[in-house]
Image (cartoon, rainbow, N blue to C red):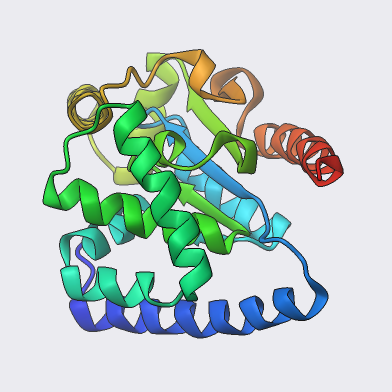
Amino acid sequence: MKIQTRSLNNMVEEQLKKWQVESKERKTVKAKPGPVITISREPGSGGSEIARKLSEDLKMDLVGAQIIQKIAESADMSTKVIESLDEKEITRRDNWLTALFETRHLWEDTYLFHLTKVIGTFGRQGNVIIVGRGAQYILPPEDTFRLRFVAPMEIKIQNVMRDFGSTRQEAEKYIIKTDSDRRAYLRKYFNADVTNPSDYDMVINTGKLGIDSTVDVVKVAFNAWKKRRAAIP
């Protein structure tokens, strides 16, 4: 399903207004931005549904991979999002983005340039769940709770068949191609292996727990992580 430009612009405008209010509130009480959750998921593992449930339960904004990509592909919208930050925040963001490119030896492709700045902007505002697009490799790990969801092939096939009304053969083909595309994307832009467990704070097999139990486990772990984060000066 395609996102129309007008609809996407409206979504960006609404988010920017919300950020402006939240930024003023944080400055008033001298509070730091809320934490960020990034979600990496195997196709058919239920990651998108888990993200929606977490967003509702934790009262956090949800930003999907498709929206991030659309913004990153549009220089105008990317600039609009980035300029929502004040000068001090822009400087801080640019400093760590420069460090990101240098330490990971990333090549400054135009798309990657806008992608990192857009994800960085979401991350700096905080209180957001970001799905896909390599956000786990872009945002500072000390402020990011990084999740990955996996599942056995049979369960993934059954989930895709149910969600898309596809045949078993279509579901399996979709899973293999989507997974291959995501791995290639992350290798190309971040020189990263998406299956490396050290890049995540939690890796959960949703086939063992199911969607609702996974959400419950994540919330417990996330709240514990937030307490430790809050205790750090």
